[in-house]
Length: 164
Ligand SMILES: [Fe+2]
Image (cartoon, rainbow, N blue to C red):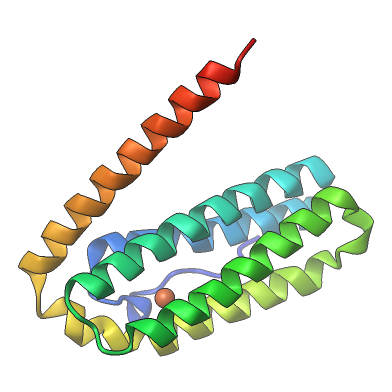
């Protein structure tokens, strides 16, 4: 079953962000499949954890690129990201605490609706702004990827030091 498919009309004109959006929609399809096949709470918890992680990473990248080119609407866009990040974290936490308390289909519908509306509405607005500055975008992408690599290496070294 496919809940939602990325189509060319969703493109925001920046390859790395289109890839992120495709991956996010892929995770929603995984969530949909987990719910439909009733594979159990563990599977759904795993998808929600990955969704939380990836939403955070994607928003970070998108915000870094918007800032790098001085996109005028960056602050209100970041606020919208913050609201959704909080909601995804809340859903994930509530599911972990008590899976029965989550109405899975309602959560699924909410996430699909939010993401498609956001991409087709707000994200599309930055498309001409970012798309016309490929050099600045390439530089910001490299800096962001480097930053996440370093952050990941630090997380792993810290996690390693806690291993008994
Ligand atoms: Fe966005």
